[in-house]
Length: 216
Length: 241
Image 1 (tube, rainbow over the protein chains, first blue to last red):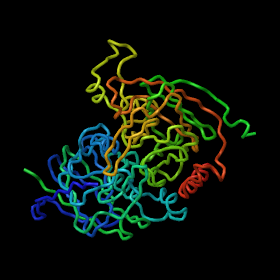
Image 2 (image 1 turned 90 degrees about the vertical axis):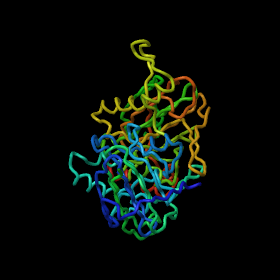
Image 3 (image 1 turned 135 degrees about the vertical axis):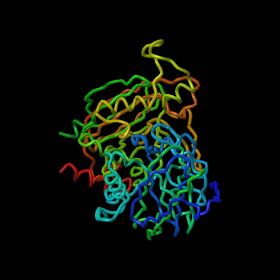
């Protein structure tokens, strides 16, 4: 793997919006066309489960198949155009100091935990419950049908040529970040993963930072 | 009694190349798809027929089984920790879950316009629109369009994550058989794989056989593929109690 590392010269003091998202919490926010969103893995090895919607027509949303096929690669890094179910570009990755982000694993849920880890693992906080809470709170008719397979920023799921996939120890470290430019008005939906059963959060979920810059 | 009935053909049909098709495959039955001519692709969407908000989840299917493709002994998971269908037979050994389907712009860009007005039913169709129209027949729309499974197509992934379509993968007579573990609304499209480099628009028919099946026994090879699948089967059996 050759990570496409790209640093950003933006400074947090110039951001128009900054916020920390606690582990196990959600964040849903409109990002206007042309603005830059930075997500920072403040403490390292934290999975940030993220879905994007066209803010003007939320039936258009992130689609993993179109994003992977059109760039001919399963991983997200600098230069990736994040595509919708209508194959339009929602956002472009403009900086990335981590190097690889997952498109295949999608979000954890109470229900899938029972198959993955044990029938008794039902009662552990999970990303899909966070997504659903955010979607219902957002209103405008959004519900479970809008909770599609998502991007996992900072999560490392290496795919082998033999067709295996595993959740491996993260490549991410404290203060690694990814920056995205909105190519249309989008709604960003984040679940900051509370999973305790695998190394995606180093068994210790931590808060992440978000910042937005209004580019001229 | 059940075992003697297993494999009994309930009906047979053929899906024309480049067309969509749908059917609720009931628990206790299986569907066998056969690539009659070779080189076919079948894109598929899967829903719990009794509650279509429960549907195929690519992420769960892959991470629960630690895989990045589908083949015999693997299962199609819903987002609810349950198994919609299991792969009980497969002559290919690889089915793509990564690449999605063609769309109108892609087909027009590669092959030009071939309209109904000029060519009647030989007009060029595309995977995205065909699947959406088939979904709409069940009251569903863009919000219900998930990731797809592409049967009979292999797309290799190298160590850097790069995708490459494997040409000539599916031979004439290739088949895959899926056993319904839940009543599954199966939406299919026989359009060409979006990464197939064919210089011409491909139209390949698919034979469909729906047969009686027996419930999985404790030694079933889908069930024992991994401990996760055993738990997935238990979740699915509890759903039916």
